[in-house]
Image (cartoon, rainbow, N blue to C red; front, side, top):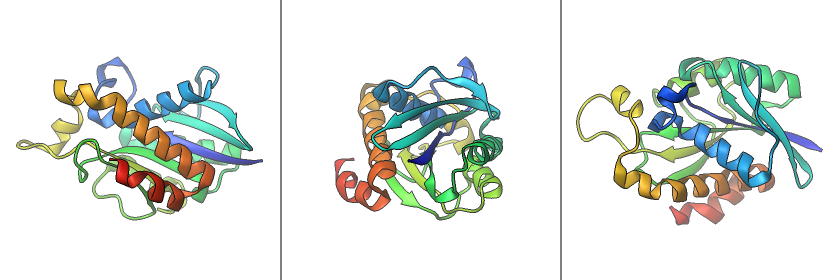
Length: 189
């Protein structure tokens, strides 16, 4: 039985819960609900749960290190569960995609995303799969303030659909491969 690690990036605590930067946590919570996973437990500088889906063990992780140190938590879970970098899927917010667009990507750069930068530094390079959840760019102001703000009322109306799509894409990527997920789902967003 192979083990995959799905890490949703975000910031801990109720103050950040609804922020665009926390969409990774939201998708991991949706996957845990969908798969009937046990309650999250504290370990690896984060919160994790483990569930069997088909013939795979899946570890769901929400690093509680704050975004910029996410890789520390992910690396600790990778080491404990003996998960190689190519079986790690990272769910994160993406400024370079319009809101509602979700894309799977294997490897690549960090595009200034500090959570991705931390993962590349701590987890053995950029070879992990990314589930990039588009949040769009702010029409004015700095991106730092934008990612640390809540979704607006129009975005919240569609948020559950976006989270479902991201969960579908992540599930297909770990069960059947990233290419299959791209082929099946990219036209949906």
